Amino acid sequence: MDGKFDNDIQAVVDADRAHVWHHLSQHKPYETTDPRIIVEGKGMRVWDQKGKEHLDAVSGGVWTVNVGYGRERIANAVRDQLIKLNYFAGSAGSIPGAMFSERLIEKMPGMSRVYYCNSGSEANEKAFKMIRQIAHKRYGGKKHKILYRDRDYHGTTIGCLSAGGQDERNAQYGPFAPGFIRVPHCLEYRAADQGAPVENYGEWAANQIEAVILAEGPDTVGGICLEPVTAGGGVITPPEGYWQRVQEICRKYDVLLHIDEVVCGVGRTGTWFGYQHYGIQPDMVTMAKGVASGYAAIACLVTTEAVFDMFKDDATDPLNYFRDISTFGGCTAGPAAALENMAIIEEEGLLENTTRMGHYMLDRLAELKDKHAVIGDVRGKGLFLGAELVADRATREPMAEKKVQMVTADCMAQGIIIGATNRSLPGLNNTLCFSPALIATKDDIDQIIEGVDAALTRVFG
Ligand code: PLP
Image 1 (tube, protein in one colour):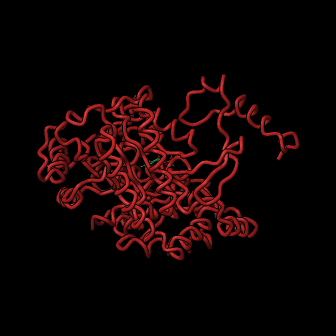
Image 2 (tube, protein in one colour):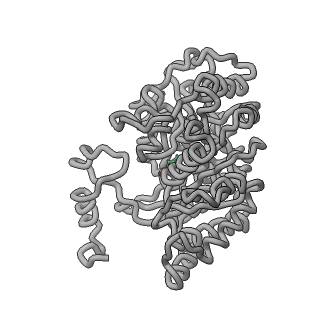
Image 3 (cartoon, protein in one colour):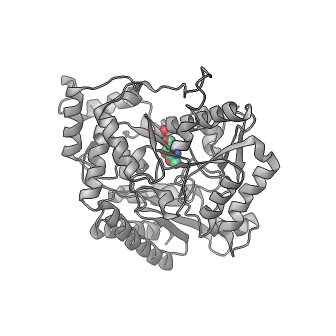
């Protein structure tokens, strides 16, 4: 560290205010208040520049630190690997890369190949490129359209925003890439808003996808990208029947099923992957955040052997391989961290804990719903939960975003960091989000629930 910053946290705050462009942030407030600097973390808790302790109910803000803070064994594994070999381009293999691939594929029956890169957006871009290349190799370029769902988010690049179902994220960044087609979302709580039946809603919502495929022409649709449980779009857990029907439709029209597990992947919902709750077999799976719990940057695109085979089936074609690279996708620290992360989840039984604590937290959120009329719906899977706030339960009119932010701010003042679906959906940024680390205990959850209870009482009476 630069000597001038040692023991002088105000110098750090000043440097941050002067030079750091924070993600997804308005900077005007920093003219009068200090930006928050997170200095340290241990287990479920972090400390800011003022030494204030926060219980982190969102795993690093964006569903990432699945195994909690301060894991020395991951840090040591990364350190040892960096000293041995920090980097070589991904056209060659590496020891941690090969080992982690094998471990990962063991958790994903039916899947076969791991393509390394750095972020969720990048992994999704690569999946889109594969779908496009398959369209060119096999279908003369025609079967190139990629479907995505209203309210889903797949990343921040122009390609991913082209597949972005969150209009507030997309606004002012167009024009977008052609060939991305939106399909309706699947949120049972708002079925009536779609004019949909409440009975068999899952099947109805999946059938909307079929209608889009038929309208576009099945010979033009190459793939569909879906979150297993929609994250920032409102913590949306599709009902019974949805995923089975989606898979059926994909098979019927030869549409590659790409599941975006960037949030749900590696334990968040109580199974290794979110799609595994629904008994489906994807063609492509992307993952990032929880893969190494934020101890190193790593993302993966995992495919079936059948997808892999499509890139090696024509020896006469000089373009017959996936002509893609990711410079830092060859860094060895990522898979080294991911291996330890996975070992921790297994050794500490964190999938089981996630399921147990997830049920407990959902029950406790349901109690809050009984007490506070502003909670219209509670939902989620494992330790990935949401509470949708409404101004009127009967009409489901969404609570104003400002009021929702008052709840998150009140929790923050209490030293509890919770999330909300802010800055994503016009008029629908009304869901409180909870995603504590997979190590959460009943005491941690009680503290979160009591904090939210107090905040709701203060804001809404
Ligand atoms: N996919 C989903 C479902 C996400 O929630 C995100 C980020 O929040 C991304 C993709 C993009 O990941 P990244 O920010 O690592 O590019």
